[in-house]
Amino acid sequence: MTAMIGELITIIIMAFALGMDAFSVGLGMGMFKLRLKQIFKIGVTVGLFHVIMPLLGMIGGRFLSERFGEVAGYMGGVLLLLLGLQMIWSSFKEEETSAMAPIGMGLLLFALSVSIDSFSVGLTLGIYGAKTMLVLICFGAAATALTWAGLLIGRRVQGLLGQYSEALGGSILLAFGIKLLLPF
Image (cartoon, rainbow, N blue to C red; front, side, top):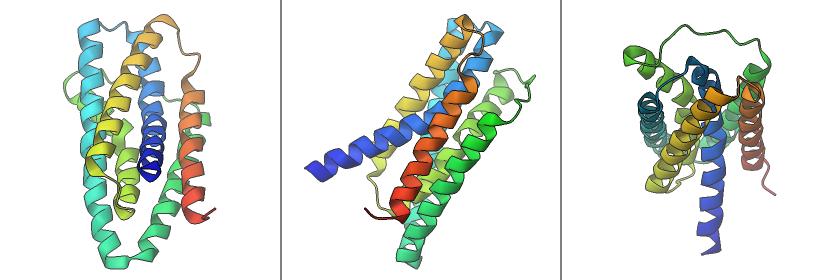
């Protein structure tokens, strides 16, 4: 029972960390003065991508785990470390402003761009045999809610939190990567 609660808390924290990328990009996109209907659609689309991408990653992770055993576990830890470092690094780079509108193909590209990292985390969780439905529900719900929050806050506050929220998400993934590599 306590192991299940621990797994749930870990997955919720990871979902929050991954959703921070969508939140920070949503802050900037929220400055486009989007209608509430558009904000709803963008959040749902990002949430769906945060379900599809980790699902694909988990399938790949389970395959790797069956083939490579313990080595795959270390690969998952290294993957989280690299992903966390990349998120932290990109949060401090100068932001290129995107002229891409969050409609049609632009919306799909936006959703894909903020959910790519969830594929890598899904790969790691697949290696460790995490509960698939729990992961997908948590990742999708967190990404949807954080995207909506970013877009709505971005409408009101013109870009105060952007880079710091992505750095926070990267720090959380970095910590999980270290925890997987150094059992304590």
